[in-house]
Image (cartoon, rainbow, N blue to C red; front, side, top):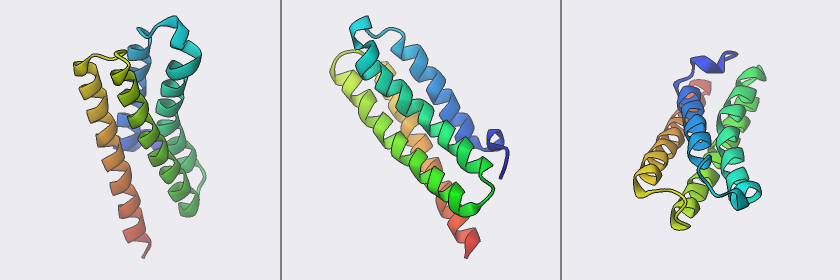
Length: 120
């Protein structure tokens, strides 16, 4: 699996990352090196790990990087909750981003399970 861009989960994770970057542009400047940086890093880590795993050329490596991507998605889920609770995200934006994160997490889990079933 060498072209990650063909994976729907990569596309969704990339779109989520773009949305995160757009939303965090409105965060106060004093949050720039704290929460803003953490949210962006966690978001970008998801599609980046999918891409890296896809390019490794072996299923064990792909599984490893898909699991790392899943962990980053869980981290992102927390960061957007924190941003919401700190009133940095509106309820509407929080719900939209959270829904996207949940979808990416489900898709990653499904892809991992599919590949594991295929491996057997």
